[in-house]
Every structure is written in structure tokens, then in C-alpha cells.
Image (tube, rainbow, N blue to C red; front, side, top):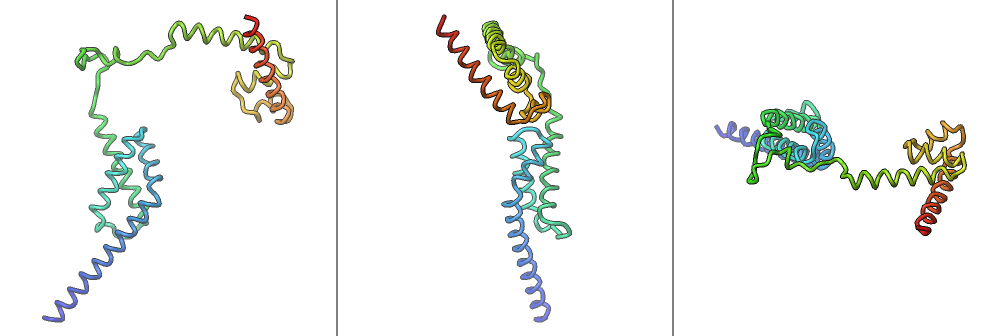
Length: 197
């Protein structure tokens, strides 16, 4: 009888030691891989608060079910699978929620579409942007042809220095120099024009 009790006590100690080792392994994996868990959840959910929630839900679930970790895979792989499942659960919950853009809500009884800000520029902003663009093109026409092409490709068309150099058939350093001269000259032209007004 005493032999059975002794062996049961040793099994419980071994189980407790194993659980303690697993808890430490879990702690280490969370510390090391938490940013990766966040990235995985973010890929599924597309926004930071939901990704944070999924990571937290997944890690909490892992802590609750740590005894189920059999050690057949790495702890980080096991945790990643749990976090991804938590993200999927959030996606399923999200699909059930529908909000009508035209349904009236809130105290003012305004539809959501009426409460959203208009993202189009105001007439004043559109006019100012058009005027600024006109001045920029006028100033760019005052540049030498090589400076104008470099400025056009980099600052107006949005090409990289490498791409602009390839298009122009010149070294990158030449594009950088032409661009610096063009920007300086445009700034001088604009300042001179403001001073004369």
C-alpha cells in the first residue's frame, strides 16, 4: 500500500514539474513571439484593436489549456495556431453584425451616411490646389530641360531616383544633382513671385 502511495506522489510531482516547465516555456514563447502573433492576427482582422483582442484571447486560451500541450510541436507553433483560431472566431462574429448606412440611429435621428464626414475637398480647397498646381507648373517651365525632366519624373510622377535615372539614361547622382538644383530654383522663383505681389 505504501509503495503505491509513494509512486503516486512521485507521478504527481513529475506532472507538476512538467506543467511548471511548460508554463515557463509558454512564458518564454509569449515574450519572444508576441509581435509575430499580432502580425498573424492583424492579417486576418485588418485592424489593430481586433488583432490585440485576438492575441489576448488566444494567449488566455493557451494558458487555460496548457495541460493539453503534448509537446509534439514547438510551443510557438501551438500558440500561433491558437491565436489564428481566435482571429477566425472574431471574423465569424463580425460577419453576423450588419449596420445599415441609411438606417436612422442616435439622438439626432441621422442616418450613418449623414453623420460621416465628406472626404471630398471643399470648393475652396479644390481652388487652392488647382492654383498651387498651376504655379508649380509655371515655375517648373522656368527650369532647364534636364532639371525639368528630373523634377517631373521624381516630384510630379513619383518615380524613385533609380527609376528616373533609368528613364533619363543618366547615373543616379546626376538625377539627384539635377533635382536639388530644380527644387532650389523653383523655391527661388516662387519666393520672387510672392515678393512682387
